[in-house]
Image 1 (cartoon, rainbow, N blue to C red):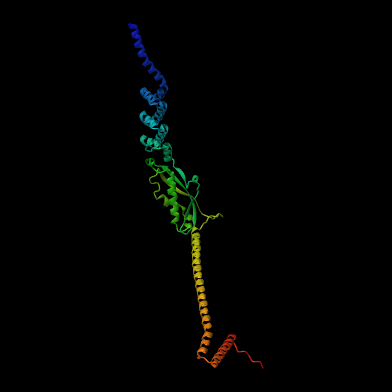
Image 2 (cartoon, rainbow, N blue to C red):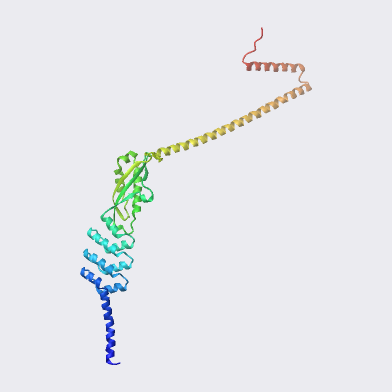
Length: 344
């Protein structure tokens, strides 16, 4: 191989990487120029590394430009790491910018953790700045009014509106809106249940909201309760519906009806026992009467035996018959009430 051929091979070997670098430069030229012109400079080697790591360079550069323009200094490495972890880079960047403008302390690590946990971090920051209103109970669950009973037994229907804002420190691991709705509903039902009469509830609905608000219902949740307002309160069954208004009276009526049925059953049992005892006594009377008839049937036999033994004479027998007839006449006169008058 002569010298000319050697130089040709060397030139080709040197030209390949140069051409490759030039191609990469022009490939990333638009993105690099945008970053450079925006003051958020990104090195060409960083762009090449993004390409090798399969990270969209334009996305990362756009995110860094937004942060730099908002006055937040953050390199491309954390953004790339969050993208590779499956996070929403733009959402995190928007939340950082919104928190910075609202003077809310929020670091990139916190925002990334919230985003990776499946929460909408940008919406959380917006809710922290602009509190939102939650209906209690949730109408999407099929219930529009809370049902509670005061001490006097009157059934109340209540609807509340809860104003909450996001607590970013407890957003990861904190309970969601459903917990807030459940706790507020429980607090309202408990507050109404401790009221002496339904009139107290109608006259001072703000007392219920204050009582519930001071109960610390937002503990271990992702939100901070700003206010609880009673939107609607009414007595059940006053609009011509079939709903029962006085639950206490209904329960007392049902209990009285149950007691009456118990007493009736007891009386029926005693009546049955008395009837059985009466039937038993009648049976005993019939038994005694049968014994009397049996004893009377033995009298003629005894008289015949006395005649046979000579212990009873004919005159004695007639005197006994006269006494029996006289006794029968006297009984007949006593049953008639007076003696029969003799005809003149």
